[in-house]
Each structure stands twice: as structure tokens, then as C-alpha cells.
Amino acid sequence: MLQPDRTERFHLERVAEGWGTYVSISHTIVHQQTEYQTLEVVDTPRFGRMLLLDGIVMTSERDEFFYHENIVHPAAIAHPEPRQALVIGGGDGGSSEELLKHNTIERVVLAEIDAGVIGAARKYLQTVHRGAFDDPRLEVRIGDGRAFVESAQQRFDLIVLDLTDPVGPSAALYTREFYAACAAILGERGVLSLHVESPVSQPQHFNRIIRTLQAVFPIVRPYLVYIPLYGTWWGMATASRGTDPLGISGDEVRQRLAARGVADLQFYNDDTHRALFALPNFARSALAEAAEILSGESGLDEMSYLDEKLIISRR
Image (spheres, helix red, strand yellow):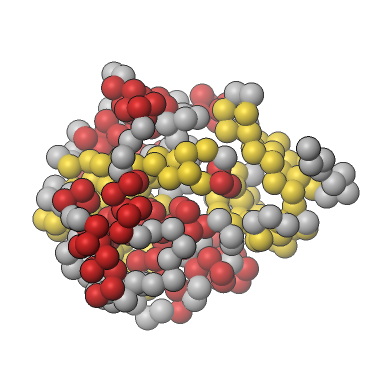
């Protein structure tokens, strides 16, 4: 059994009661207080550079593809010709970079509330965003993502909710009201994609978010991705009025990837597209439970959620 190097800092993050993740940290590259949160970029022997916000792991250089490829491509490939895309959150640039791989994409709007995250990502996380911030198709808007959606005059083919966990400024972006606002600016074939917490560590939150999506969209497809850095299976979903990611075959996925010039993928392909949506029984059981719809009046219990995400960082 490997023992931690006592001369190094190590980050412990509780996934659920009695269970968590451990990452050894070589050194801290930047530690700062932004307008909204504490931001750290650290070097790790296992995952390369890693981004933490308020002490919670967000992404890393060597692990990011598990999350970013799968929050983007199942929805993007399901759409027959996505041109306009919106990312809410996603200040590390990883989701935008995946969207920009599609040669049909003419414009990506990145609405991020915290300019500090974008600044740190541009400087320290180049292998996550791969120069996406310099692509002329990317338009960065600093500000409240909810306000942007509610005031938007244009329509989008894809909306990616690349959010932090549902506490603090992000809590209002997991509600029926916000999902309805997203639906209003999606085209008829438009697709919303997002992460929906874990059916392993947070089955009630997973269920409530999916139920809330189903209160707004007629086609909701939850799916699972194992993300090593998060230490568990992670839930994601697509939601749409007219596009079903299960409505295309593996051959169509392969053809669309080739036609759009989408390459350099480490996870997503024609086989994984359909496999992602094959929910195991434990996830089906979680979704079979009764659950309250999340709204402005009854959001997630923030204190309960934070209790489950106890963070310990030591030297």
C-alpha cells in the first residue's frame, strides 16, 4: 500500500460519508482570492496541474477529457448542424475547446461570472483550453450566467452548463426557472447538456436535478461517466425539445465526427456515444424514487450539500 510523502501537501476531499479522494500536491502555483471564491492552481505528480475552487477539485491537465469531452460531444453530435453555442461557467476553457473542434461551430459564447478563473486558466492551464481563448469564434462574457440567459435575444443550438456544484452563485442555475429560461433560447433542435451530480455519492441530488429537467424538457437523457479525479461515477444529461442523442446510430456518430473534423479525442467515439446512455440498475433505482422539483423556492439544501463535501487540505 502506497504511503503519502509527508514532505508534500496532500488534498483530501470527501465524496460521501466514510469515503473520499486523495491527491498528492508537489507545489502551489497560484493561490488567490477572486471576487467570488478562493482559487488555487497546483502541481500534482499524478494529474499534472489541477484547479481547485473553494478547496474543491474542478479539473486537471491529465484528467479533464473524461469530463469535457462527455459534457460536450454527445449533445453536439446529436444536433445535425450546431452553429451557435453557449457555455455557462466553464472558465477553464475546456468545454469551449471541445465545442470549437466542430467545424460547423461559428460562435461560442462563454458566460463566466468569475474573471479570476479565466485569467488563471489562460495563464496556467493551457493544456486544458489549448488556446481556445485565442480562437476568434470564442466570445467571453464576464457576468452572471443566469442574467445572460434571461436577457439573451439570440438563439443557440447548444447550451453547456459547465457549473460548479449547486451551492453559492451556482444554486439558482439548477432550478426549473433557469432550465425554462435556457429552453426559451434554444432552437427547436437545440440541446442543453450539463452535469447532474453523482448517483453514487449523491443519489437524491442526481434524482432531483433530472426530475427538474423533465419538468421543462420532453426529452431528457441522463448518462454516466467515471471521472478518476472525482473518485466516482458522475452524472450528466442532455435535454431537448426535439433532439434525442439515442436517435442516431453509431455509423451516424462516426460520419458526423469525420465530416466536422473532430479529432484528438481520448474518450468519446461512436461506440461510447450509445454506451454512455445505458444506465445501470443503481442509477435507474435512484431515478425511480419520488423527488421534489428544484425551484427558486425550494433549491438544494446548501448546508446539507456542503456537509457531504467536507474538504480537508493539509501539509
